Image 1 (cartoon, helix red, strand yellow):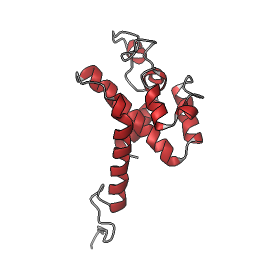
Image 2 (cartoon, helix red, strand yellow):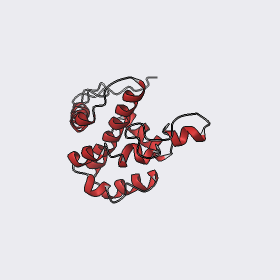
Image 3 (cartoon, helix red, strand yellow):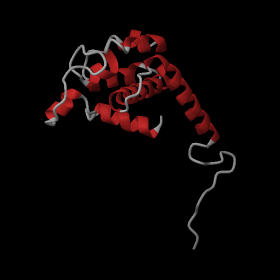
Image 4 (cartoon, one colour):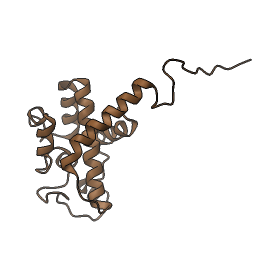
Length: 155
């Protein structure tokens, strides 16, 4: 999993994402409703899992049948449920999708960019394929998998 996705997962699990319900707790004045749909309070669970605009993304990725069983729980419960139920590659796909959804949300809110929810499944798959290919070839860390360089202290 990409380091930025790992950090994002850590922030999700520790409720450190700046959504309206958290910002209000931190005394920041923001509208409380969902920035994408206006439906409910903007919680991390709603913004990343249960917002009506996201359900087509989950259907397209083929994970809604699993996700619909836990989507209305607390963030930690949802993440643990997914970690327990999904195979490693599917969990990685899910976490990368969540990162892209968060990126899309923030680009829409703060970057004045058009939301690209319709292409996120393609972006996720391409992103993971590139990352895994570079990882196999050692290019992600700048290593040659055939002739790895080992730095040893000399005396």
